[in-house]
Image 1 (cartoon, helix red, strand yellow):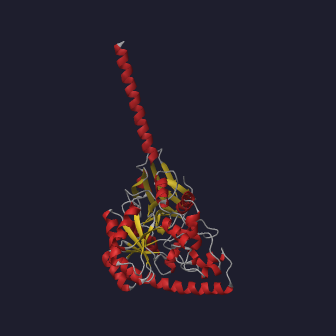
Image 2 (cartoon, rainbow, N blue to C red):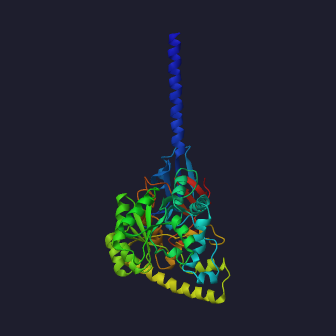
Image 3 (cartoon, helix red, strand yellow):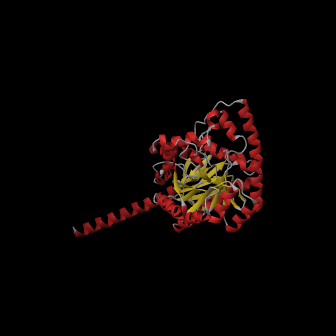
Length: 460
């Protein structure tokens, strides 16, 4: 009887071991995915691997090489995705966006003309009339639409309520929602009583908007406390709006407090004065930088600061959106066309000076607009080719929204390139984006974390 029990115990152990080995083998096979394509572009070097294959294991890139070699390392039961002659790229990065804003209504001419910053009034009022829960749900839709258009990582820089983008980030990370990786900034920091976003609004409304959208500060101590208040909500980055009369001491306080917690600072600065204050304060990136001078670009290069270009309204984007949203008088339309031409020339000059200066640069969309007939993602990716129209080579455009952006975010070890160890965030276009940068507006395949989000190229 004892011998029988021993035999049965040994048999049980053997069966369990075989079952476990089978499970491990099955897990090993199913966790491996091979993505094949006609070409793979490395944005940092500009080199193209053709044909190309990417071996993915447990959501990360395991190896990159030619298909014939990597296929030898694949179990027969592993998944292969053949994208034909498509071009593989790293997932795109929008380094400046506003997922929880979807400005659908542009005010009529009379209303715009009687208000400072009139275009933003409807969006700011929505910040207080909509519930925080609804704003997060709208953000969830915007996030998914961005991802479906190939944007796998975003840095959300404000206009999200107190912690709406933090909640959205956490829900996506927990896989309760589908969306890009999010670096959340919570509320924007702004100098008290110098906030142009609410200038000329009813004081009662202005106060309500400010409470939800901004952390106001006065003086060095106030600046430090504003950073601490925002970090309480577990933000990833500090966004600060710099005015011409914001002091360098205040900016240094913001930067020192953020850096003490290993958090970067992104500064909204468009005028020469605000840009200089941001530079002297030691920020990590200057957002917009429209009036930056050659001397300031030199200082930024020496300090290793990034300029985050935002060609949101390049060309006739705003005019077309306005025409599709509101009634415009012929006089107003003529004025808009003239402004488009003038602003386009100015931005062309900015891009050329940036390229010549050697300063580090990335690109974001600054998107918070609803463009009729387009999803948020389609509207967002339509802004990237504008940099090429402004004179930036296609490869530099792609770098600005992949490798460069990853470095600016401090995530170069995770995203921005198709390399072993990085997240398996891949996109593919049918053509050659170096020859036709508008291919970025027609992303046909999207993968995040090794999971296929969209595939219009077949080859499952």
